[in-house]
Amino acid sequence: MFVDERIVTLFKRNFHHTLTYWSVFFSFGLCIAFLGPTICDLQSQTHSTIDQITWVFFSQQFCLLIGSSLGGIFKRTLFSSLSALFVSALVISVIFAIIPLCNNVLLLAVAMAVSGFAMGIIDTIANIQLVTIYQKDSAVFLQALHFFIGFGALVSPLIADPFLSEGGCGNSTGNGTGEIMHHVRLMLRHTPILEHNITQSHLTHAGEAEESSVHYAFWIMALINLPVPIAVLFLMYREQLIPCCPSSTPALLDKDELAMEHQQGAEGVDEEQREHEAGGHGDIFSCCQNDNLRGLPVSFFMIHILGGLVLFMTDGIVGAYAGFVYYYGVAPPMSLPPKTAGYLASIFWAAITAGRLLSIPLSYRFQPVRLLMFNLAGAIVTVLMLLIFYTSSVFLFVGTCLCGLFLSSIFPCMLSYTEDILDYQGCATSVLVTSAGMGEMVMQVLVGSIIHTEGSYSFLLCGMIIACIGFIVFIGLLLFHRMHRNYLTGTTKKSAMVEEPATEQAGSAKTEQKESS
Image 1 (cartoon, rainbow, N blue to C red):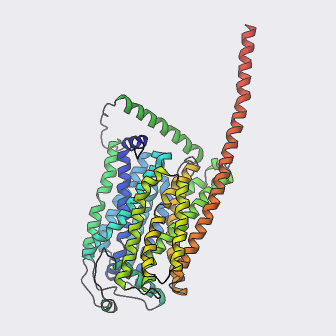
Image 2: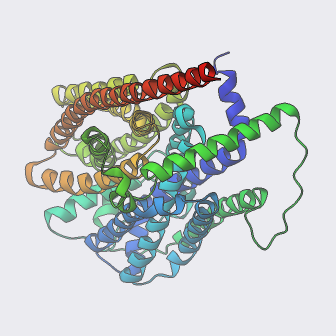
Image 3: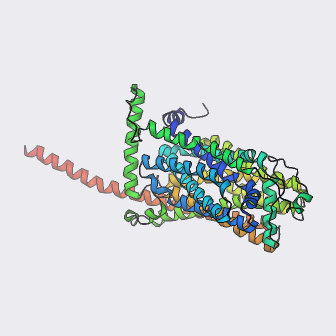
């Protein structure tokens, strides 16, 4: 069989939990990509400038980062984890329902910030729970988890399409930053999924107001997201974690299922003991305050730091590329027509989605470290080729597709790799999720400012520099992995040497007792 029977058995034992976490991440992908195409309608709704509405979305990303950092707090018990998922998913539906009522940019910023915080909690908890359930077999399921993000991000513009106005943004800034954001707006609206035939004359006459019906799109989004908290609540009911509901009598199990349940319970006890010893997958702040971390080697902490830095760079590339590839396409020397350049962002997200789907069987066949090496090297080569053929519009589309494929599975592979190195102790999941979110937020601002100052060609140059830095940091991670492995080997030998004299002493004592008797 292509998939090991043991993997199938694990999935069958935990299919309800797994499907629930996958559905949460599909909703997460919808929420992340849904807001982009509606930026101009929200600007008209709040009577704000493009710069002001941009900082509204920044507030969402910033609070998503905070939520990712604090999400590990709720990992202590299954009840707290599922409760946090339920509340966060429900809050997202409520926020999307009230966004059309926010006629002030400050109210909209608060609403986006709350939804971002809820998304951050979902991001951390779903990753942690899958790693806790499958442990050394989690690579396949993490790949599938992050496939659903890309799938949701690819589908979400279909929901917004019928309700977007075609009149452009009402208020635009006259400086260079406003010009960049104007191109970003074009990128978000000129996608093949949206299929809006907005001509340049429409864009120049942005002052012509048009009746917007985008509020229907947000209400539909709230309804689409509503089954997610219901699914989490149903999982809590099945696990008998709802206090107000009487616990039902579980069905009888056959011998094999009963043995599996006992084995799963024993694994759960072992996991709780490991969490108690080394902090588990808690939030970053509680991990830093854990007294048991003092005796651990430097390699233990460096694996956390370097793994987070790799994702800081690679997820930063994803955010910057998705945000500014349209601007690069329409600017000289490429100078593509706006409608043609609009395909770039959709191709990039489609490649990420396909790459994550392709990585599911690959993660079963190959070790995460090999996939990471291949993907990082492939991303560097692709950006280098884009720099060499910077005037070729054909290779821009090919390179965009390849770049999305190579970057798609780096996060789940890194998560599986670092957790495997650390034997599922420490705070790798929380650190990696937080670092990835921070990189995506920071690199968008940094690359955008450099493009504004140095021109469109600096877009690919920034990507090349960031990718090379990420690869160098990954080499350092491999070195510290070897150091940590040597440390664990030495600790095991010392333990064995201590146990041998104790065993010999106990054996000699028994011999003396027999001789005396």
